[in-house]
Length: 370
Ligand code: NAD
Ligand code: TYD
View 1 (tube, rainbow, N blue to C red):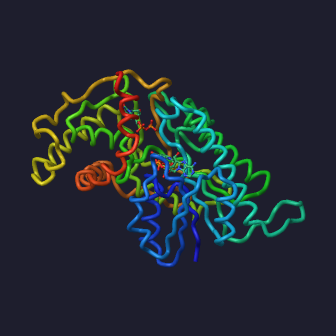
View 2 (tube, rainbow, N blue to C red):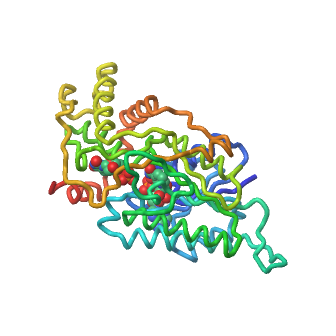
View 3 (cartoon, protein in one colour):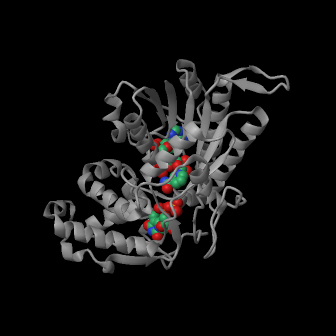
């Protein structure tokens, strides 16, 4: 039986991963370690916490004592490090927090895993670790920087981050690789493209657009909307992480993506037309709507000032993970976006819960003066 330590398990991808694991495996234990920042919500996993295989520790990944005591209490086999400050716009406002959490937090997790897993030394004086343990760092394609109109990110693309967020994630990747080289810590890094799906915090493009449409608010599109992102349904990302944990070659980096590049403006238009269609087909969905159904149209789109240093295009080449480990995505965008929108229409209570804190103040600060 494996015991997983999932940091950031109350956030978007981490919570989906916890649900994925609980469903897929019978015999396992999961400890979620999460500091419940604005992006973390215990309600997201409260039903799962009724399951005796899962428990929760509220702690910051930078806190040495708190993390140490988790490793002392449990025999952890896998660390999956999702915990991070994850929003580019917030990183532009407050880079320091991103460096603290994403870099120092990752280093602290690595150090505590190393100390807990070490069983001795080999003939070259390198540490030897308990069999079967692994540290998986959940990274992002944003560490590779920005692409022009053509080409893809491979695992050999040089890291060239351009935002404080992506720079902090790239630094974390380097420190993970340094632990692999210097201390022979068994690690993998996954670098995934943009995720979408249930439990996505409504500061990111897709859930923000859905929320605003339902509230009859303008839909802020940065610049001219021509920026391209490569979208992957969150469950496919979870499946990729599970695949890398169980089959990934120690020390390797794997890119994760499903060849689904879309311009932001096309995403926004698709979300508008899909919500409208779903409401026409199912009048019950209209209860989530604050305005009339006829107001759901492209006139809601508002082109606003561009994000500083806005990366133009991301696109992943997933040949390594699919060729070597047999991973392929299951949900195509056409189906995934409908599933996602339906989930938001049916889970308005969750949206209200997660946006009841400082969300209003954040929204006015970012969008109010544009
Ligand atoms: P998220 O912002 O939704 O969730 C982050 C979680 O980490 C929250 O639960 C938060 O409370 C927790 N957290 C933040 N700081 C913490 C700290 N110091 N100590 C403990 N917990 C802390 O993020 P997400 O979108 O789920 O992303 C998860 C990971 O996946 C991140 O590392 C991100 O870089 C990476 N990633 C995200 C995407 C994407 O499209 N969202 C794509 C590729 C990679
Ligand atoms: P986002 O969801 O913040 O993810 P990331 O910056 O990590 O890719 O943004 C996705 C794209 O959508 C990005 O090109 C910025 C753009 N965007 C908007 O046009 N308007 C918005 O209100 C937001 C949040 C993002």
